[in-house]
Image 1: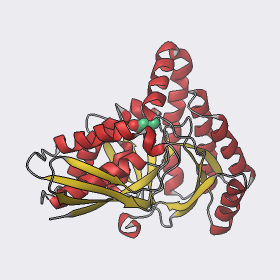
Image 2: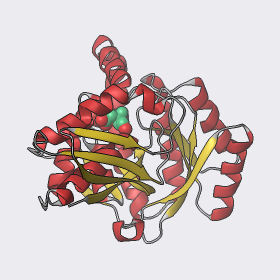
Image 3: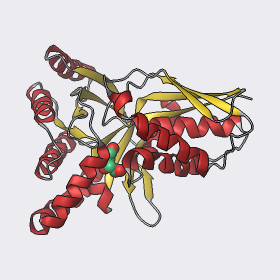
Length: 316
Ligand code: MEV
């Protein structure tokens, strides 16, 4: 047998970091994916061909985390490779960088490819649980938002809990966005740990910030339901301010956020773990999307033009 599977990249539109503390968040899959292929080999154990395109240093920096993640996936799936091994190949059109869900996309893709190869017929919910286990290799204590977007696709309202809440937000029309890559690889585990430390030290400062993040999630959900992009943009700008206050932004992220807004983006914020990685700018319409992307590229940064709010079948 051989197996194949994909996992989508993602962009967190509201409340990364806050989501770790059970504040609701909104995330979208993006129209780029990682593809995993599994083939049998004569040796025991697993080996990996990582052919994904990536920001310089991304793959080297994450190599130990990746090994831990794949071992966790094998264990969770009860796969025994002592008698016959496998080769995993990673490819696809998702360019790996921080903030774009590259780790989650690879966990989901690998889980799906293994499920097919070993004829395990796991459901999407089971794949999501396995990918969550794999994400622990990269994040330590992930909220589960990234693997959920990567597994199910679409625009999702997500709340971490005893049982995570996941509701699809249906848009009539997908909306254009630009992601801008600082080129800096960041460590999500460190970013999350930093927030925890500061929050514990300074609860008077962090309490109101977290309360406002929660309000923003509900306001954003309403704005998405009425497709009020001006309002969503304003809320994204405010969300970025909160992320600055909890100290997960960086000079490069703030620079790209300002650049996007100066060129007409309705809103812009860092997306994902921060301290590097990507920004997300809301740019309804192809012309605005092009203007913002061109401005970012002129400054020497890479962009990704995509849409959010696409239903899964359209994404594949
Ligand atoms: C990382 O993409 C998102 C964070 O909120 C961490 C997590 O939710 O696991 C920073």
